[in-house]
Length: 270
Image (cartoon, rainbow, N blue to C red; front, side, top):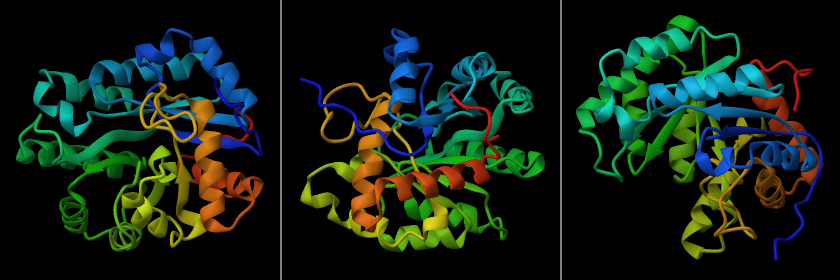
């Protein structure tokens, strides 16, 4: 039996793959449940040119939903001629608030690493030119991302999404100018994730964000089910406990951070 979802404050899910069929099958219900759980805004994330177009369309048709467009590192090898031009075009959309998901990945062997780095550079340059924040994917390659961002020799506006690194990695990302976002993994009971919770406890509150990464990474106690934006309340509740905050305080802080970073209008809500 599904436990009742907590509801508090006004939360922003900064990373959800709303174009995924598992969310599209009951999209109205997904949004209704998100609203009931206290969510006010969602950023729908693209990972290819095709689904970047899809999330841009979703954002155009729904209040409180905004889009990030880009090609995720595991998909760069499959990109077709014209895909980058499509991303550049989509980035000018009125409800596109970020570039990404971009970054680097050494966990999956789906794209040559130099090709990932070249595409990451494309996103970095376009984000700088357009004044857009970045949504950065990093799996098993924190040192590589830190090195590539460091070569820019300027602060980077954006977020390290679904952070899973150490406190030392977090400090390096913060020094580069990034926000740090936590997803459902911070709620998992595995002792191997204690360093992640320790890192979370050291993030400056003004750089903290929360996300679901729906339909992935469902938090406890709904782990094992497809994730959805309403489940953000569980992650936020757990993170509030780690930080010694009330859930309402955590919601207020992370929502203000998200709206500032992504320039979200406060009156455009679900």
